[in-house]
Length: 136
Image (cartoon, helix red, strand yellow):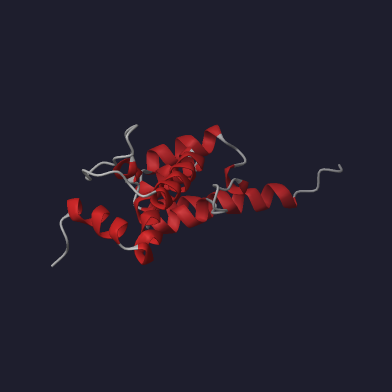
């Protein structure tokens, strides 16, 4: 039986060997779970976090902030938002987040087939444009 979501964060925090799992909240688009108050207490907890956990959460927060709109749309499978963000950022294929992941990573994380197809199409368009001879 899966643990109640209110039990997951404390389960991770209590065991230093599980701290790497904090990244899963970013991957799932749920970094809001990691929000802290000024006293160091995080959503779902009633006690302050150890400093090492606060540092890891800060890395996750910075990671979330570095994810571009196209990456966020791909992560959650929102095709309309993906198309809009792609048109707003022509260089989106070359952008990376703070962990070095590109839009392909987030597209496969989200698993939306329509966005995968759209990304393939965008890649093909980019290749055609780059291969055109502009010396004419």
